[in-house]
Figure 1 (cartoon, one colour):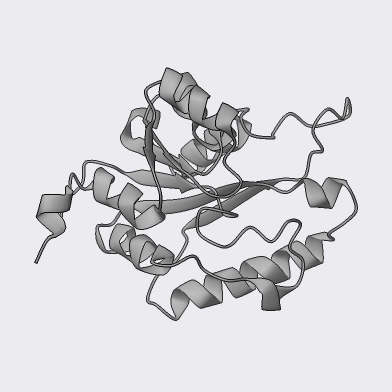
Figure 2 (tube, helix red, strand yellow):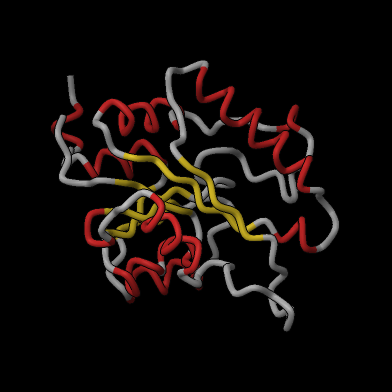
Length: 190
């Protein structure tokens, strides 16, 4: 099915994989149900899939960059087992509130702007999907479509912000991808 989108920005933890809190062991990487198939649907439609993730565990010295990269490698391998792939990944190691921070931490737009530039994308032609307000807030700053997934990490404040900004809310990544393709429950019925 054809989509007018050129790219989709995905949060990683709680959106595509289980949020294991400062995950550093590749053996703990577990795809969420239907996530690989949802990514593959985007791949098959020639929509770029870009992961943008806050990784304050690096800045807190709980995770090394090498451990982060090993987790990323495992994440990509699990997707590949389902014929899916990620086109690009951006991470921010900043710790919230650190005055020495680089300013890349979501909801700041720096990582997204870098990716838009790197992939020569127009912000109005992308979607932002994640399980926290900070993952989708960029849609209100740069343009594009925001869709928030309710996960165990989604707070009531996240939901309130999303609703206040008319961000669509779903329960899974497959549902978010259905929205992108304009599918309804009726369209998915056998």
